Image (cartoon, rainbow, N blue to C red; front, side):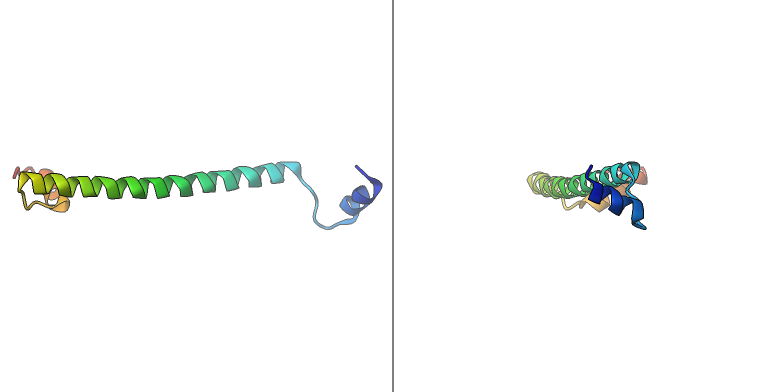
Length: 78
């Protein structure tokens, strides 16, 4: 490291900490991973809802996803 950089690091109020920098990089990577995952899951959810609507139309049922879930939860079959 050059003398100028060493002087700046020694006399600055902000200390350069390798571990803090590493933790920041890991944190940014984790946040990016979860954002990408949420976007992918949102797309997958939309595809599954569309497929559920298609199957509902094919079978001729007027049961929505919420109604079917409620009926199963209450122990009723439709």
